[in-house]
Length: 177
Image (cartoon, rainbow, N blue to C red; front, top):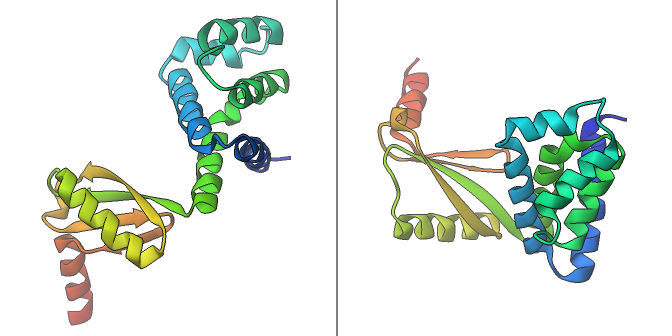
């Protein structure tokens, strides 16, 4: 079975447990923190992925790092991933969990690309506008992209709303040809 399918199954199972306990948002944040901590520490990644280190040694180290700092569902998921040798799918599991949680909670994440940094008020206005467009509560993450020249691009899931000057110029040049 591919890692993509396995990650989705683990994410779905973890989501069901989190939903039953009423801690969906907490679990999502904890998963992101754990994945970030592991991703940002190359030595820890090598250690966890090393085939000659036993699961007991790996879980003992994770216990020192994460036990008591994450909820029981997240901790148990980490233990299962290590026990099954699937720690490499953690990033995919986090991504899949976030998608499942967003869908269930009627939320969506939007990445807003702009030529200049956006103020909090501008981000709130964008979130409000796209909440009306999508019918979901929008969480905005802003990225400065100088090549846009002006305007914004908003990516929500696999859709791109292009209101950038560069995009308008590109559409105009295609229309003229």
